[in-house]
Image (cartoon, rainbow, N blue to C red; front, side, top):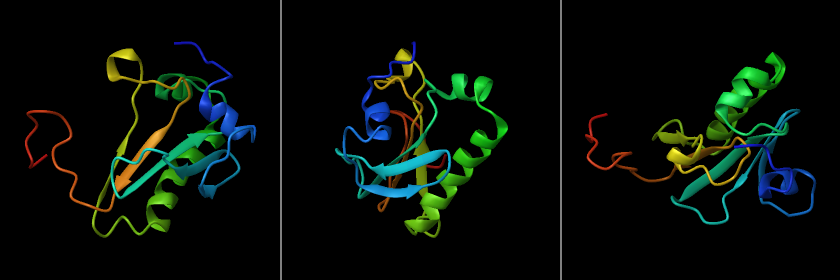
Length: 124
């Protein structure tokens, strides 16, 4: 999957589409998902043009990687999620059902989330 600079997250970063911002750092932006799958559903994206984790981990400078990972934790703390728990999810590629070719991490919380995959044990 090649990076498409007209994807929705690139357009949000350019200010062409508004978002309900939760957090912003030098290299990352977090905002509420427009179709939440949980009471808390926030997306965290790097400001750079990276398709997925593979692209990001291979090509992003260390400062961007550190900022992005720390931003995910900062957003979870800002939303008060660590006490009860939360889930992070990032799809990479078509088999994982990645629909936007820009790295993004979903943060879900605010309720018991259950098993992540069909047939997965609740004790995982």
